[in-house]
Image (cartoon, rainbow, N blue to C red; front, side, top):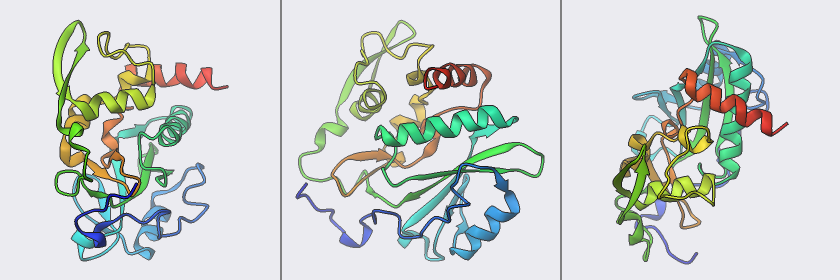
Amino acid sequence: MTEKFSDQSRLPTDPIDVKPDEEVFSGQPISKKDVNTWAKSKGFTQGRSGIYWDAEDRPDSKNFLSIKGCHRFENIEPAKEGLALLRYLTEKGVFYPSTQWGMFTDNDGAYQLFAMTPRLGSFLSDSPTGQLEQYETVTINFNGQNRSEWTRLLDLYQRIDPKFDQTIGPVHTSINSLVNPTEASQGDNWGWGVDGQAYPIDTEVIELSGAQQQAILHNWYLTQQ
């Protein structure tokens, strides 16, 4: 891509320039204390809604650490399955390619997944030339009802499943149904990568916390074995 962002200082660095420790992102659960110690050593400071910035001057942060309640599990097996799915979706382009995923045990014994992602160009102000289709609307069927949604939501479904049919909509047994359409529709939950592609920057676009979601997750995991 030859298009450039309006502010070059806000371009993401790929790969993430805070080198992830192999132990932190190994996929094996580590303690919450160890995660906090690691995060502080890298300069992360707590922000809002489970987001941590890697610099005190938050608007210029290059990386984010996301710890979201929708990626929390009571048992280790579904947590491992969730981690496998989120890494799979990263490979599919749902999240920015250099996103790193890890797991820690919380103080109450629950298992929490977390992600480190690079700062991307603002979706609303740094759009590359010729990407206005991201602001157009399409019709998607949800539970038998047609709804007008942003093109970016359809694009997300099709990244997960290139054969996704918007006239049918998300099938309840497929991993497409794990998309949170409310979160995925919000423009400020997206950003632009150096490759000219838009990516969700809020990991809550994938919901894994409910019993139904975990049943779908488990079925998907079995198909990967």
